[in-house]
Length: 117
Ligand SMILES: [Cu+2]
Image (cartoon, rainbow, N blue to C red; front, side, top):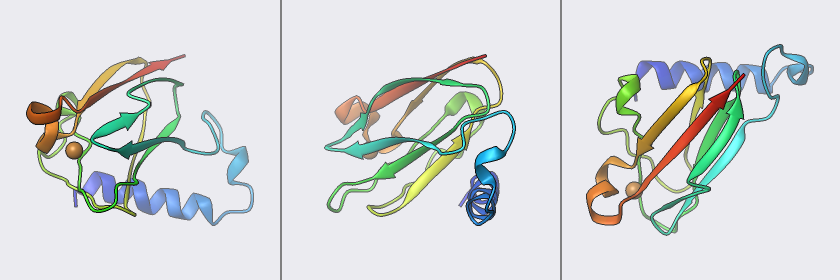
């Protein structure tokens, strides 16, 4: 696993265990969830405020996927299986396209996150 995504998961786990995690400054307390099913990101386009954590949940029966932000320097292959999640916290406004790297060419499996102030 990519060190940065591991760190994100560890921090998320720590925050989740804190009684007042909902009061953390600058962002949404609960992650915004994008489900992955039938080779699609649902929703495939999402607008969030700066500081929001987005969580991708693989809810397929058995198919792995990835969430690959090439512009953010992600590792090309970081596949994850049903029951697993990936999270990313967006700290800067902008438009962040991403793909499922294994299924971009075959299924046009892609999405975009718009981050606003
Ligand atoms: Cu995929």
